[in-house]
Image (cartoon, rainbow, N blue to C red):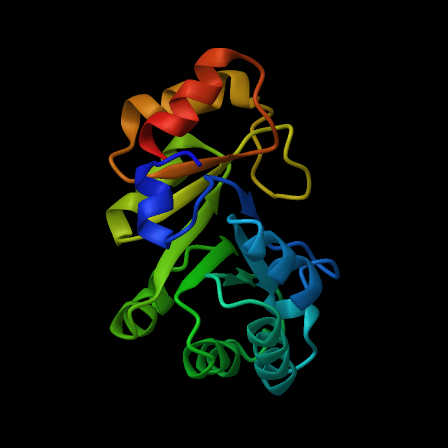
Length: 192
């Protein structure tokens, strides 16, 4: 067990996060991660509708009594998913952690915070991490070049990105995509 600001904030034993992954972040994986003492995330947009997300949250609750969250990616699309419906399902499901990704989550923060939900925003740069901190996110996931599938990467590896994040951020963060050296690991744990 490693005690960090991140583990204390989210009520977990280990500063390890299974972030949202399309088609993979389902109740089975999320509950297994939670039962192991880390923080797992159901991927909201893997579920076709908000009602399906409600059912997936309940399935996860049936498999664990440990903390887990829901990942909600705000996509730049012509026809947006039913974000208000997904957020309502998260709130009604009693979820206390949301991982956001994609676009700026500022529009959705008031309703999430009003319901006591902590928000982690995925960021691929220090400047985006600082913006997430400024708008009120509780933590960030700093995603270096090694973490695939996230738009906005500046081809900066965690070897460089994590120590810079540790120097700049006041909120806890987790490292995504791996670490290249001991300083990266120490930086991730120092503010985590």
